[in-house]
Image 1 (cartoon, rainbow, N blue to C red):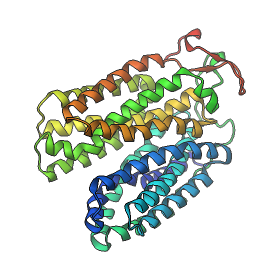
Image 2 (cartoon, helix red, strand yellow):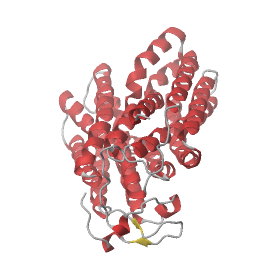
Image 3 (tube, rainbow, N blue to C red):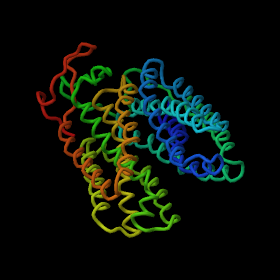
Image 4 (cartoon, one colour):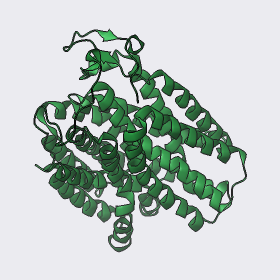
Length: 412
């Protein structure tokens, strides 16, 4: 089959899953209707992201065994059902359960399947394809924002959940039918796999073998630091504009849209660049750029233009993290267990969804930016520890790990 058809299905799924980033549109309408505390309503988003990241591990392991189509189909059904149930919620606890837990579980179940499948079809363009797949997730909020606002205004916030649940369920299930795994030994026409050192030829690590390498822990911490810094800015962009720059609410809201655009754009651009520059080199550049932007936000007086530019730089790099880390996981640990392996790596993002906003709200914003800049600087330094991939000396669960520096240097 045409491998680009798989990408079409993957993007359709990710657009629906990425609509979760539009949660802020529901905050005030829910407060107005039920009288709930706004801070409690906001917690729904954190619960959703955490459960989402947790279920990527479970779903990744299942889809590695039975294939992505059925897992993504089930994920779409669970996600749609959870959001439809949210239309019946009359207490904050019910909202947490229906949208946060059930909806988040469905998102996590479906999320890893498009990524894992596309990476197997495109060994020659892993960075680009990973970027395209997750760009759909990043653009989901932009695509669904007008529809969500129109539905809330016309039928009310609760009924909006019902309509959205039906749309998500149908669209994700349709997209899932295109997720077909390539045949064993598949090589794209006209592409010759790169020649690697014989000892470096086997990289299909099981999850246990991946966890036995130091590379995993370094990459996990790098992902945590980058995602925490990015989520802090994305989650507080409007508040930063109002409180730190002195903008009106309408002007500050523009930052949310601009950051979302650069977030989606960064996933494609950095994913493509990583195919040319190398994954670790690209990560190094991203951490340096994001860290410099964070430092400037903490140490300079921003006007409207500089505020948008610096927020966009952070969003651009944040999008790149979401594109490159799944690709690094496939490059370093193989594609046989990539669903499970990336699910474990992705837990760093789930923890970051809790840590990032905490950093931003625990003290002054300038102090938060300085902390985030330091995290990016540390992550940039850690990148030098994982420039050479881990290696399995032989196939099988009992394979011996060879330190990377015992092998000849490979080019990025």
